[in-house]
Image 1 (cartoon, rainbow, N blue to C red):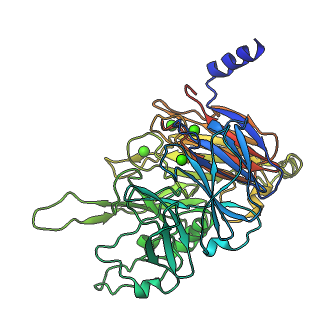
Image 2: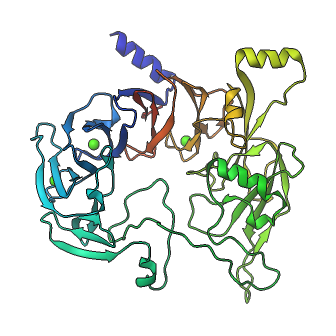
Image 3: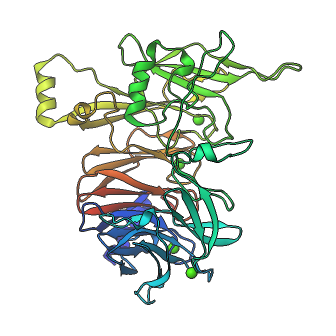
Length: 467
Ligand SMILES: [Ca+2]
Ligand SMILES: [Ca+2]
Ligand SMILES: [Ca+2]
Ligand SMILES: [Ca+2]
């Protein structure tokens, strides 16, 4: 009864995430999401040493575990034999193995075939790897050799072979038109797509008509501290070489962009210029127009995976951080050193399509207290740790999670009336967070769950219905 009362209490308080802690023994334990039981809800697979455990629905309880062959280097979950039930495919040395994923099934490996590949090399532990591809209605096992990507049937029969390797580009024609796009987070390609990884990139400066600003053909890097450094470095550069994000983050790829750089005068301000397409005029091509620079207090936070749209209007919004200026009083400094925390503000400015600029008045100001050490660890990077912008409650408005202490996370959700400055939910973890490992929509209803790693455990923040 007590647990029922507790459950009812947390539901009425609108807790968005439930916390599941999955203990692991090895410091290099890995995890990945997969559909392991054919029931349509994502599951968490944990590789801890050579023990692989399946947690249905990413719950703490595991349904079964498999002790992998000690030579195993790579594993993948997919229905390789076409019976509708997912299987575990593993490469151990030259052997390609299949394990049953039935909770009550046999735990021994079945040898599918033997073939030498680059995955045959010994690794310190097994790691998740895309081994199974859907091609022409069949599930094939992809094995990279020194210069080919071999696609083999479960019988071992060679079905397709593609040139790879450092000089493959000189030997292989991709044909026209060739297009490539980064996929973040990584996911399985559509049936028929040939999945490739970038092993080498080459940059070139195109010859453009005089007066046009040459752009970096690779585009600006999109994430993390390196973008913050780029935003500092970009201050004197032409605006169209500044770091940027897409103005329509969820729309089709287009060239309307938001460029940003940190204020050259050293003030904690961000300069923003928006490039939009002009209404089409007959007889002329599509024209792009760059706005003048607008200043916003704070430093724009680059987003690595998801450009935020907090009000769900299809336009990217601007997220900035700012710190309270260190007050030159002995009391404030002493207090900061003894308490170990400093005030930080996150502010959101919404894009206003009518004026073509970000609103000068913030949509929300979120006050935070963060450990002083977070300022010192990586100069240039935002002092906000484990910041995740994603859709957590399934209402098409970006929500926000970040750490408010080494072992504490807080969640802010966007609703039609806005975002409240105080957290929607605070989550005390059993230990400090090391990394955000995974994010994924486990129920297919637009709510994103998170997996974070800590010492000796994975912490699953499971998005819940009604949260
Ligand atoms: Ca499942
Ligand atoms: Ca199967
Ligand atoms: Ca928006
Ligand atoms: Ca939301």
